[in-house]
Every structure is written in structure tokens, then in C-alpha cells.
Image (cartoon, rainbow, N blue to C red; front, side, top):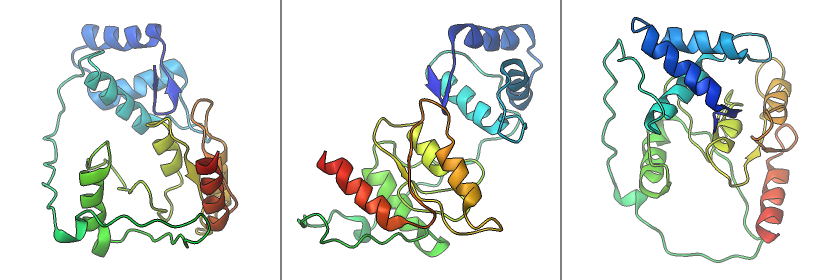
Length: 208
């Protein structure tokens, strides 16, 4: 089973189950750290991939593979997404490839409500509030180089990553983060800030 860009085998899932059964005092964060040590699941800088592991554990529970310890804090209530006229379906438009100019816009607080509504209404995964930094699939968000890999781990569709020229390394760190993803989590990567090549690559994929 592949979750969060990592393939979990049956023995690892059995190990997680045994820890939950034999150590009822374990908290979810502790279980995540224990598994990362056990499986040597680490980031390129050597740190444990705790957040990815916690997401993977939640997905295993959702699939019915295990039952996690009860959370120690109350879950954050997810606000109901309001449907507005602005999010209603628009009339179809047809253009030849190359006639449309693609514009990539960062999602800011002023426009986030509309993007959340569009995702809730039209994306097959629906809207879910994310832990930590919140990002919108389909946009390019400053300092969110993990987004293309996260999306690629959830879908079999092609994913293209565009590293932005931001931060002290001017996008070089984002380029490495997108290009050096683990096996089984492919992302088409273009040059730093080269959204035009991303558009051309998308057109070629659609044309193939």
C-alpha cells in the first residue's frame, strides 16, 4: 500500500498494530515517532518524517487497517462551505491549444473562500481543512514546494511542479524538493519560475 509517497508493507502495518495493542498509553504523536525510527523514514536532512507519518496513520485508520489511540485534543470543527453565485457553473468555452493564456495566481485570504468553495463543489476529493499550512491544489503557493508531491501521492493523473523564485535560495530548494521525490510519486518538473513550460507540457500531455 502506498501512502504519502511511501510504500507500506504488511509487516510494517502489523508492527503498528502490535504497538497500539501492547502499549495502550501511546499517543498518536509518539506512535508516529516510533514508526519513523523503526522504519528509518527520514527527510533529506535526517529529521523524522513525523507529519507525513501521522497523515499516513490517519489514512490507514480510514481504510479500516487499524484503530488509532483516541486523540488527546478536541478536533477542530470544519466550517460548512457556503455556496455562492460566483461558484456556479459557467458556460462552456472552446479554444484551440495555444490560444489561451494561463495565469497562475497565489491564493490569498481575500480569495481563499471562493477557491475553497470551488474545490468543495467540483473536486472529487472535496474540501477538507488541512493541518499546518493550508494550500490549494491547482495554484502555486509561495514556499509550498511539497504541494506537487502531495498531490501526486493522491492521484494517478499527471502532476506538474513549478518551483518559484522565492526565498533565500531563489527557488533552488523548491526545485530539488520537487525533482527529488521518491519512487512511485512522479512529478513533471520545469525550471524555476517557468510557468510557460508547464503550460506547454500540460498541452503535450493532453495531446498525447
